[in-house]
Length: 264
Length: 216
Image (cartoon, rainbow over all chains, first blue to last red; front, side, top):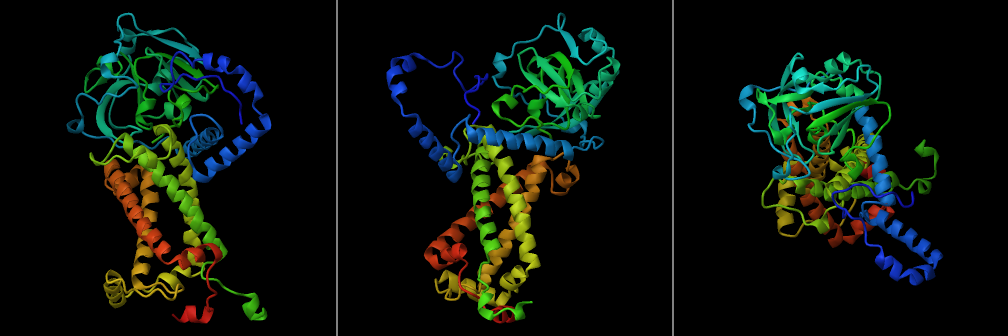
C-alpha cells in the first residue's frame, strides 16, 4: 500500500480536483471511525478483489501490482527488441491519404503550430544545444519510409513518412548515444519518450512530410516523431523539444497506465 | 520402483494433483484473458454489432484491460506450457485423448444429440470428448501464438506475414476466443449436469487401474 499519491493529470478526473466541503461537514463522523475495523474491512476488500479479479479502481494495491507487471513487461520488450530488424515496408499504392487522425481530443480542437516561429529545443546530454528552425531541419538529408502504423486500439494503416533520421540527427548534435532515453515535449503538452535502442533504430525519424507533402496540422506540423517499432501513441506530434537523459520520466499515456515501452 | 511399494500406497487418481492445480490456474487465467480481451476489443470492434457489456469486461478503462491482459498472458502461457509438457511426458494425452476413431466419433455424436451418451465411467473419455479436448488444446496453442504476434507484430514480422498479416491475426485471435467461449459453455454445462466430474477435478476423482488404463 503506497498511501495517498499526489493527483496525476488524467483525462478521467475532474480538472478542478475533488470538492472537500463534504469532508469538512462530516469531520466528527470521520474521526469516530474505528481504525481497526477499517483496516479489517480493507483487508477483506483486498482479498475479495483478488478472488474475483475485479478492478477496484485506478489506484490501490491492484493497480500498483498491475503497473509493476507492466514495468516487468517493459524489460521483456527491451530483451525481445531486435535493433537491426527492419519493419516491413510497403509500396506507394498502399499509402492511405490522408493519414488516420487520433489524439486524446478531436481533430477540430487541434491548435496549429506556426512553422515560421517554431523551434526545436534541445536539452540534456547533448553537446550542441542550439535550437533548430524548420528551415535548418529541411536542409538535412531526407529519409523516406512507407510503414504500418498500429494503434493500441487495434486498427492500423500504411503511411509514407519523410524527414530526418533520428539517429543521424542525434549524432549531428552530439547527443550521448549511451544514454537511456530520448524524451519528447510537444506543443500540446503531450510527452513521449523512447528507449535509446528504439531511438537509434534505422526506421525512427523526425518526420516533416507525409506522402511527399509537408505534414498537415492535425498530423503534427511541422515536426513529429515516427518510428516503425512502436505503437501509434508513442509517435509524438507537434514536437517542440528533445531531451537526452538517463532519468526515466513518465509520459502522457504511461501516467494513465498504458505500457511505457509500447513496442510492436 | 512402483513394484517395491505396497499397492495401497500408490493410488493413482483420475486427475493427479499437478493436473488439478494447472486446470484451475488455467480457469483463472482464461477468465482474466477473456474478460480483459473483451475490454480491449471494445475499443476497436471487429464486428460492428458486437460490443461486450461493461459488466462482463475486466478493467476500468482500456489501459486497465491491457494491463490485465498482459499480466494474464504470463499465467496462461507458463501454465499452458507446464500443462502441455505434463500431458506429453506422463502420457496422459496419449492415454486419455487418443485414439480418436471415426466410427466411435460418429456413434458418440449420434448418441450425444439424442442425449444418450454414456458417462457412467468418468475415467474414460468418449470420442466426442476426446475430439473436443484435442481441438481446444490446439485452439489454446493458436491463441497464444497469435497473441504473441499481436503483441509484437514487428519483432516477429516473419510470423505475422506467415499468418496473413496483422488484421488477419487479429481475426484468428478473436475466432480462437470465440471457440474457447463456446467450449466453456459446453464444458461448464456438462460439468454441472454431471457434478461428479466437477468434484473429481477438485478431489482427484476415483482411483484408476494403471493396467486397465494402459490397455484401453
